[in-house]
Length: 245
Image 1 (cartoon, rainbow, N blue to C red):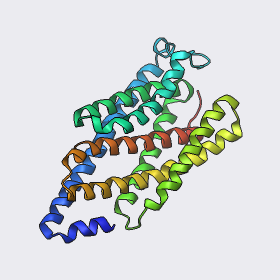
Image 2: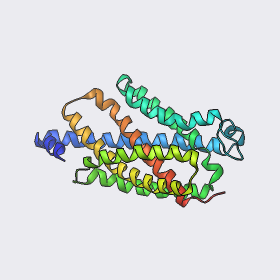
Image 3: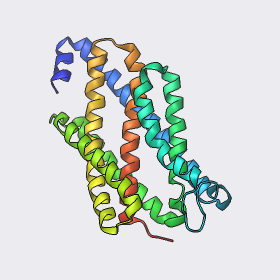
Image 4: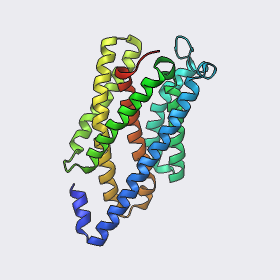
């Protein structure tokens, strides 16, 4: 953590201010992520437990998506890319609003799980994911090991994973689906630790530079990254731990 040591070497007072600011920043990141998770869970449960609402996007019996369902399925991916490209044009408040809108759309895309898996198994998987996520994020925050070298490898793996998932949507291969779940779980576990460390080191670098414009929006971007890691870990674990209706 060369950046962290550099900041602390500026002076004791400066180091204390950075430490306090970092704690507040990380608390905001996790707070925004938690609210987004509640939005996603609420929307997914409300739609997934109502045949009338679910039928707007999918056949409530076969769960096959209609045209609107396909749009909802790919909308979160498009919104993530759009958010990354337009973040500099957003105010801090607009970035948070977009994040919560994204969380609601994600809830629509995940609503089907309440028709496929039992409520108990969904809750159990969520608990297991929460414990694993907390441990991985804590490791990324406290470790002295530089995880930046993992970034390129993980992103290449993520791109390959997305391509494989799209292909398997049409192939419907059980073996490929199992491999995707295993590899995806490992990728997003690694990204959780990597992104947590990156949020920390980026904050320290920008706080030292007094980049207030960046600081005002970076918590939302960091929360989005961790939120995506959590959601994907949850969905991949659900394939292994979920009990079907």
